[in-house]
Length: 199
Image 1 (cartoon, helix red, strand yellow):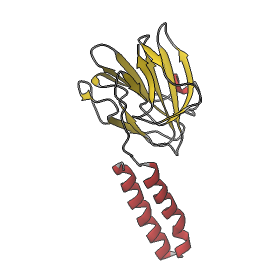
Image 2 (cartoon, rainbow, N blue to C red):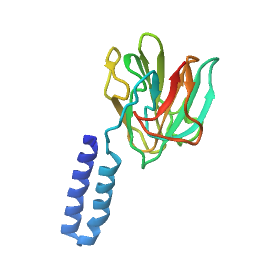
Image 3 (cartoon, rainbow, N blue to C red):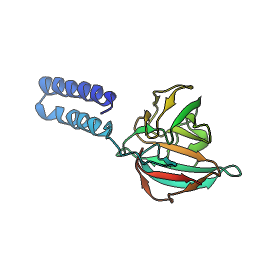
């Protein structure tokens, strides 16, 4: 469980108790339901991390597009709805060589425009032989990107590195040394689903 969910749930439950006390018990029920949803939304389950020369998904969600941006670079876009786990993980083990924040808009994260126009945090992980860049992208509702690490930190494959609150998007950029293992329309799980294998 991400601690933010506990804080939200406590605050909403306290609000529900106050509303119930000063009005009628039934009026507090909506706040209790939202508190329960926060506990569900901020869940953080353990995941089996695949071994071998593979890149795992940094997020739960649906693969909404796969296409080439630059010669030899493939972008995989993953859309997270409010029912997906929103904890983000490192796709490979290595050192974080760059963390770059970009201000932007908050259009629907399912739209292609979100990849370039929305607020996002761009992270590059380098293992000495290859590197992968992924972007935490805010969505229509999500306006809070959280990243626990900083440039120079070492991370393990599938290690938790941050989260995006509520609906959002994660883009992963792979070089020509990677062979894709997913297709558009598939649902992937952060840390355990293989996005690509090293050629």
